[in-house]
Image: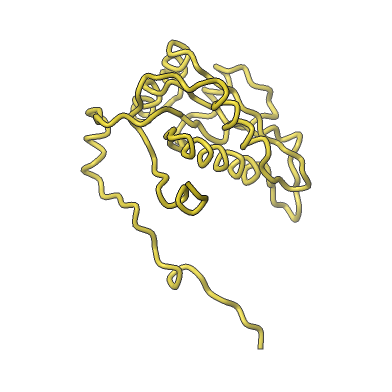
Length: 185
C-alpha cells in the first residue's frame, strides 16, 4: 500500500481482536515514531508501552475519563502512552513545540501501524494529572495522547454500536474549502 492509500484508508479503530502484536512489528511502529522530525531535532517524545491485558485494564480504570474511551482501551492488546519531556522543548516567540513534535511522532506510528493492518485511535480525553501520578512520571513530562493498537475486530461492541448514533464521516472538506493560495501583488 502506498502512502496516499494508507492516509486515505486509515480510520479510527475502537474494536480490537485480542491477538498480540508481534514484537518485531511493534518495534517497527515505535521506530517510525522515533524517526519523526522535531524542532531543532530535540526529539521530546517518550513512549510507555503496555502489552499486558491486566496492566492495560488497570490503566484504563485510572484514566480519569468519564467512562467512555477507557472502555475500548481495555480491549486493545497494546497501548502506547505518548509523552513529551518538556526539558527537550523548543520555545520560539512564546510558542512551545513539544506537543506538535510529539503529535507528528504519534501520527507516524499510526500510519505505520495501519501499513501492517493494525488499527489505532488517538485518545486525548484523559485526566493528565491522575495518569501522571499513576505512572509516576517526572514533573517535566506531559502526556500527549493514548494510542491503543490492535488488529481490527469485525464485530462491534455495544459501546461502538452506541457511538454510531452520532454523525461521523470519513468525508473530508475539498481542497478548495481549506486551501488559499497567497499571491503577493
